[in-house]
Length: 280
Length: 250
Picture 1 (cartoon, rainbow over the protein chains, first blue to last red):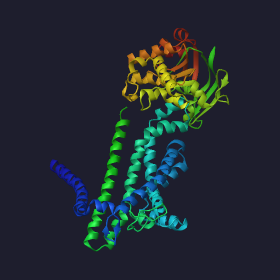
Picture 2: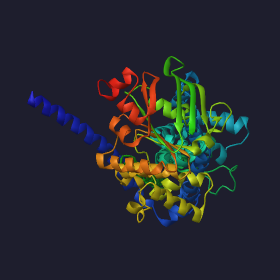
Picture 3: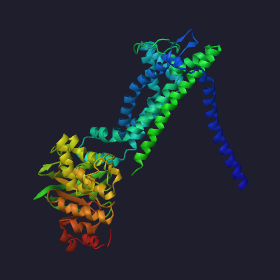
Picture 4: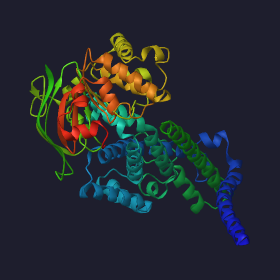
């Protein structure tokens, strides 16, 4: 019996180590292959003749797309979460809304990209541009911001609300002054995780934002915009030289770094939040 | 003179299936302490929360009349915001906001429009009235959650006082406190009745006997008997009251 226990334990431990190893191998592989191309010029120049030059417009483009995405998804998500958590009574309609929000989170991103292409690019005639790409990304992360915000709002103790209401403070003012104030680290964590998803998303921006190789910076939200994931996709599938190969990994390394910075921020914020909430 | 007059109050929970308060009539005297006693589930907290319409936070149906200074608070008498400014509340569990001592006390007056210098003096005065000033005056910026339970409860009293109420409702304010903190809150209640009308729900009969001028005994949603505290405890008229105050049940 004891031997069997040990074997099971060893097997589980190996599985856990393997999971970590996969991550380390992927990151290590990208690092080893990509670090050579990283230089100030690579980060600050525009690409030319397909596989030459740097990825400055791609970095800026990715940041712009995420910004547009957040400008749309954060207010929508937080407002929906406030409604679901504070105003909606628990009935069929609320449960249906919540169910659809959950479903939306599971839709494959290529489908959201396709919807963005048909609805935003063609039907609303926005064209392939930063606005289309950002909004489509917004559709993608909306359910995540709704869910994270709703969870954060729900963990605010009911006693805070009652204390505020009993002082003659209106419900909306109570939500703004007490509930959101206590919930905001949780909401921010949700937004950061959404940002992480959005910045790495390829299919959605491939269909709605631009070709990935744009060598110029967008002048308005109606211009096509480059992005790191699409650039990586183009380099990996269309490039056949060693320059393209190294740029694939160089851009990947930049993307992973941006993602890690966002994730670490999210983690730190969440820990602070848990500590603050756990003090009572 | 009575500050609050309750006439034929009925409260129902769960879409009317649970009848929590049945035809309750009671007068609350100005600048006196009225204690509401009775076993758990007798409706005393529901009654208390009817006085500042806090029952409405949950889905509850209320019928009957509650007069505050002669105006019915349920039927077009007064806006619920104004009502709750006049009728403050302190809860069973100390529930300070996760903010500094200063911000906790300033919370109400700030939202109701008090600013700057005036706010400082409101905070100081409220903390003094709540007998907390001496302990916290040099730590006003510290997070309220770092203080002891008794201090937190007095902070909640200060927070309620800061919006300048006329009536303060206490819902078992000492049930989460140790005996020393409880004694301090009771001293405070006696000091506050000079300026405020106080209603206190308590499951602790000794506490009711120690602090209150009037006592009302609740049982199964009905108000069985009310009167001077000495009379309720020494010469109860109803057999059920006598059984309860002598500890035969409850």
